[in-house]
Length: 122
Image (cartoon, rainbow, N blue to C red; front, top):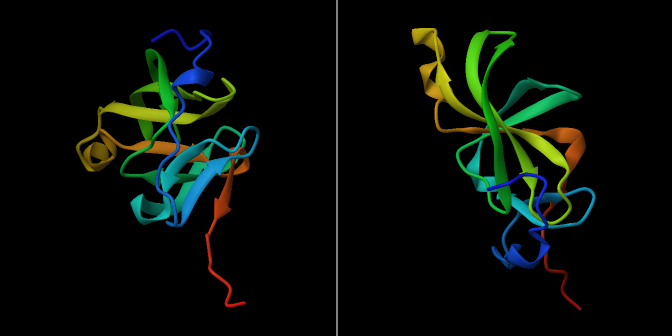
């Protein structure tokens, strides 16, 4: 999928009534809060959250990137609603101790909003 292509019409509205993370720019749902593995990661622009899965994202070009924990094969991920880069996807980790990241997503904290969907009694 071309990260520069217009994919706004492909954004799915999902996880109604569930706590979720949404894009800070366009409010597209990016992930369920239940998919959170760790908040102790660093992204390009500050804190990053490691997630089991993400939705409404498209992958950029795969590349080897030196990160704090060594070289990883990653692809930037882009919001399908607004094309903002919201983090990256871990394809491969060279170091054995980092293999747990493979197939996971790093979402940048500054690129998303936590939406709790609490119900208030009226």
